[in-house]
Image (cartoon, rainbow, N blue to C red; front, side):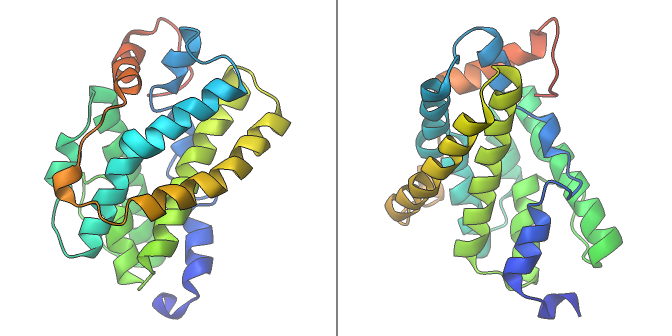
Length: 211
């Protein structure tokens, strides 16, 4: 049975670049920030990612996944938290891709047109995956994907990309230590520039990424 497998092996598969949820196609508004010269180098990438983690989407995602693990049914709230049309598309499209693979290859049924993090948390519960392990894999995967956007699109060197990845091992641990007390009452974002440029991305004349 799949649910008797090592949880860390399962997470390694789910967050592998070969797992077909299409995350590489989304920049979370980062492409628009780069095109508008708001992010031009390694230090500015780190600043952006720190804000996303401590004050933006990833902070909310932590709260949402934690709440689902605590038994809350909050997919509508998750979708309502999207700050732009593209952010909602990103949530649902990746969720549907994850749901399809889980049904076709893993034998797990998840609801259609639900957010990626809702599906991910439900699958984590199904396979008895520890929340602390799931959230670390999720946060690192999200950040790594955006670092790859910067390497390709600024462009930035592979070396600098890896330096930032290493830096965020500690940053994620710091965030998790500081965020243990957060609940659904704390959902919100003060990362306004990221939200604004996720809207501006919708009107870019030329773009590589879907969001």
